[in-house]
Length: 122
Image (cartoon, rainbow, N blue to C red; front, side, top):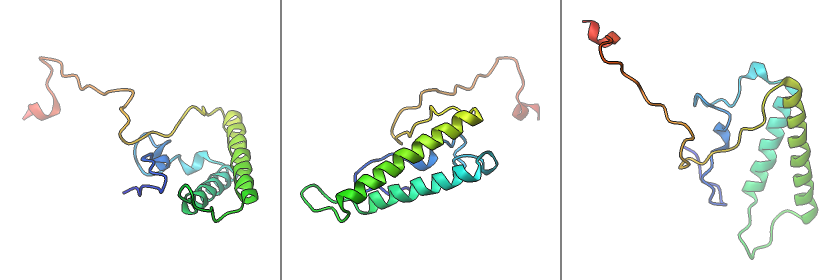
């Protein structure tokens, strides 16, 4: 179960690169040590931002300099991730999907009349 963040977003960023819904975003063998470090740093920074969310009108627990520093770090991490992906020949076109967002493709099973399926052999 995915907890709804304080911002109210229903997105599931943890599975955005997981076409098989295995719970893993990308094979660990395909990631370099630097990519794993960047991914963890990005996750921790976004978790801190989510955990310290302040409702409108309330004072944010982090200083403006700290917030700016976190934004700068996330921008640098994203730029480096893009560089590493381009160097490895991996596309960077994957984006987070919302759970209630319609799928862009639909799988339609085709049954050809006259062909026996494995279940019909008995």
